[in-house]
Length: 72
Image (cartoon, rainbow, N blue to C red):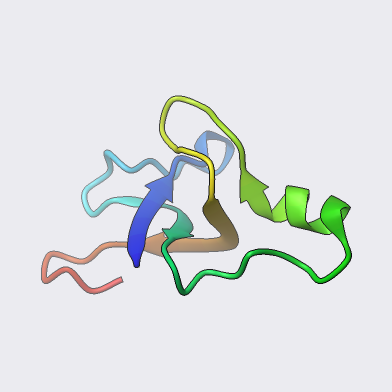
């Protein structure tokens, strides 16, 4: 499982903040492949391209921050 934070500039959350803040994005074999028989909802759930993320990153919709001890 890999984790990244996506900037949410309209809310003032940036991964360059101290501590880093942003939308929690997940990637890995334990992440869902999508909604059963619902490609439209699946497309909404995954980010497909862009400079900070690659295909397959799950956008959780949750705002998170990374604490100095590494906890999210």
